[in-house]
Image 1 (cartoon, rainbow, N blue to C red):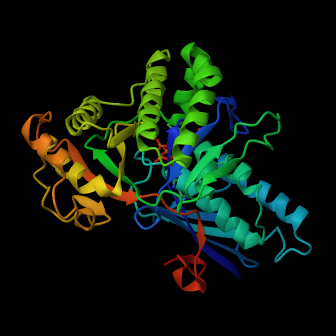
Image 2 (image 1 turned 45 degrees about the horizontal axis):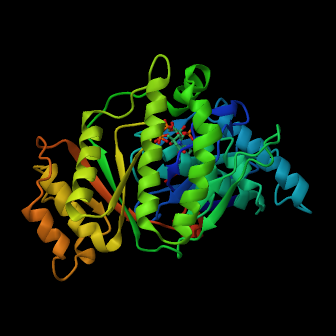
Image 3 (image 1 turned 30 degrees about the horizontal axis):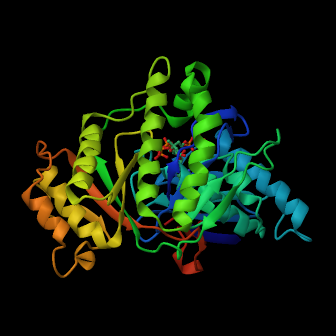
Length: 396
Ligand SMILES: Nc1ncnc2c1ncn2[C@@H]1O[C@H](COP(=O)(O)OP(=O)(O)OP(=O)(O)O)[C@@H](O)[C@H]1O
Ligand SMILES: C[C@@](O)(CCOP(=O)(O)OP(=O)(O)O)CC(=O)O
């Protein structure tokens, strides 16, 4: 039996991917740019095994068996990796006819608008590549065919997915902009909103936007290229003010396009809008842009905050969004916030407590908060980290 286990990170787009020019190959109408989150707090973990005695291809996701050969996106990634193995490897490690058993787990909620498909498909492709013995820059073009945003999770730091021009998608790849060491104090607070409402999937939402929105064409042609250049420069210069403004403007434009879609896609809810109001009020109160928000295809907010401001921002969130569970250790998950606390309150915090009043919302609008930061790309783990029992070929 051949067996490999790997982990892969979540990424959150600053300049959003929204709209395909080819549904089958998952080719986008615009470039996008994201930040990869640390795997210490959120990651997908996948074990893939190949064995001569396996009778059929099987896959388990978060403890449940899920369709494998009936899932066209998984099969497309698998076939592309097998072709790459045939082309690149002098001798195959094992015959391609051998069936696979794959076990995967996300250590955060799946299909809850927290980019599980990005981490999940990046992990699947990275693990299968390790299993077949291929390491190649073409991996991002393969992960892209599982879920577009997954191609960006194959690199750490800040990553740009180039839309490419070729009709076969060979140049639609993700490349690093800067590594995670470039801006290590870039932290993230994910405010998970109490809302179980079903959304329109990203796949369907963007398809309908391309069919019906006029604004999306202007965005792809005019706004995105300008923003990608400007935010790349801001990241290189570690210019938080510019970075934050572009990030918020792009999130707002993406949701404007969702509303310009017919029938409209409504992803943000009243709590999301209250978070937007909070961020602008907080930034005004401290007299500088210290926090930036971005929202994907759901109501949860992702806030970008520099490490030195995390404790002040968390305190302000707790004031503006009071929660009965706030004192529970489970409420703020991830990196301990106290670590970040500055020894003395800054003068701007005095202003915040004095002259400015933050909006106060009803209790318990947030479910919990995840505190994480910029991180590295996927990693291969040791045999001891396997999710699959090698004597039975089944999940542990
Ligand atoms: N670890 C994983 N391995 C393989 N596939 C996964 C994994 N995690 C998630 N997926 C796939 O991604 C699907 C969830 O994608 P979906 O886009 O609905 O949710 P999301 O990625 O959490 O949300 P969003 O795209 O809005 O951020 C799952 O149903 C599954 O098919
Ligand atoms: C709003 C987004 O998160 C959309 C992500 O869309 P997906 O990558 O989930 O879509 P498919 O390619 O159809 O699988 C923005 C982004 O991540 O860039």
